[in-house]
Each structure stands twice: as C-alpha cells, then as structure tokens.
Length: 169
Image 1 (cartoon, rainbow, N blue to C red):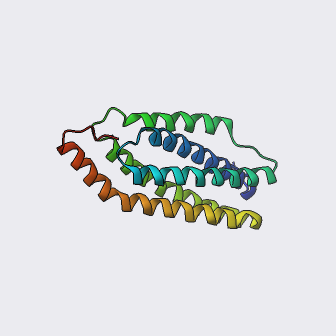
Image 2 (image 1 turned 135 degrees about the vertical axis):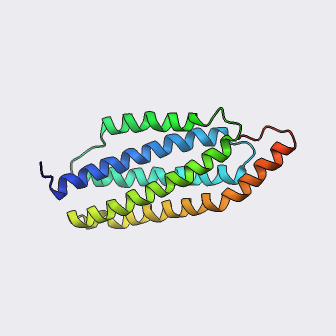
C-alpha cells in the first residue's frame, strides 16, 4: 500500500509529538530525584520548558492539518517513558545511567527533527519550518549540554561515593 507525502507528514508530526511527550515524562521524573547535581537539574528544567514549546509547535502544525496527536502513540510512549525513568531508580549509579540515556535520547530527537524537517519541506508546509528548526536547535543545545555535563557529573558521583554519601541522584 502506497502512502502519500501528506499522510506520512501527519504521521511524522504525531510520532514527534509522542516522542516529546515521552521526553517530558522522562525529564519530569528525573528532575524530581536530582539532589546532588544542580547543573543537571537546571539543564533538565530549562529543557522541560523548551519541550513544552516544542509540543505546542507540533500541536499547531497538527491543528493546521485538522489532525490531532495519536492517543495510541502517546499512551504507548508515555508508558515507555515512565518505565525508562523508573528503570534506573534502583541502580547505585542512577545519575550516570540517566545521563547516558539522556544523551542518547537527545540525539534520537535530533534525528527525529531532522527527518521531520525533510518531510515538512516535501509536504510543502513552509509555515512550520522555522518552528521545527528552532526545536532542532534546542535539541542540539541540550545534547551538547548533557555531553558537557557528563564528566563533571561523573566526577561528582565519584566524590560523593568515595565520601560514603548517597550519590545516585
């Protein structure tokens, strides 16, 4: 069965929206648990705000197409997001595992927005390109920030662990 570009674009918007909702679930669970890593907490809080804006831009593009987010995709990825956020909770090195996962997830979002931009252009939706480009830059910025925080977060984890303090979050 052949799909036309417009159908593919609507699906890509729904997929990216669901991905952003998953990202919010993951970050909101993590930020609740950060106690010893204020730089990471600040980066996550800033990106949560950005992600709300990204969600709004996606909803505007969907609305312009008389489409809505996919309840099935949202439900599934929301569940997965919560499980991902909880998955590292019992780990002694929860903060490190979350940092690795955040870096990977940000790069996944960069790929999603790069693809979405190509599909939007092919679908002729020039009205939303600048918003998606902004979202891509925000994801790139967060990926860079997480990469920059990897070393200091690891060193702080070592410092706390060696001092006998709870260092997981």
